[in-house]
Image 1 (tube, rainbow, N blue to C red):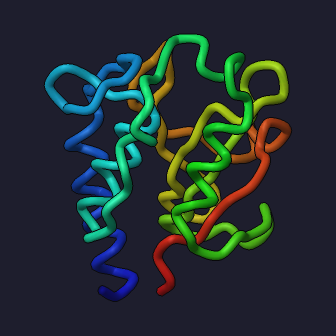
Image 2 (cartoon, helix red, strand yellow):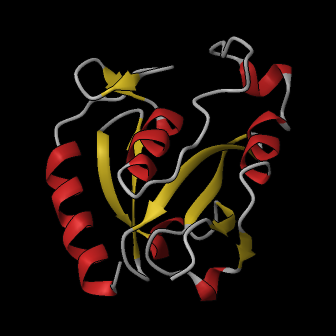
Length: 144
C-alpha cells in the first residue's frame, strides 16, 4: 500500500470511528471500545492481527494489580521501537496516564496527530505536542 492509499484508508477509518464511545473492555463499534479494542480493530483494517487481551480478565484496577501488564503486551507485538522525533503514520504510541504506569495507546495518523479512545470523549484525534510529557514510547508495526 502506498502513502496515498494509507492516507485515504485512515480518513475513511476516522469517519467510521468518529462517534464510538469509550467502554472499559469494549471490543465493538456498536457497544464501544477501550484503547486496546480500538487498536485491535484499527490495525485489523490494515491486515495486522493484534490479540484483544492476554487471556486474563481485565479488571478496572488492572494497572494497580500488575503495572507492567500493558507494556509487556505491547512489546510482544514485535515491531521496531521508535523515538518521539521519528514518529510516522500508523506507529503505535503509548503513554502513562496514572501513577507513571503505561495504560494508554494511540495510533499516529500523520507525524503530528494520533487517534485514540479517551475515557471522557470516546474516539478522538489529538496533537502529539499536547501529550509529549506522557509519551513513553512507540512501536512501528507497519514498515512502509
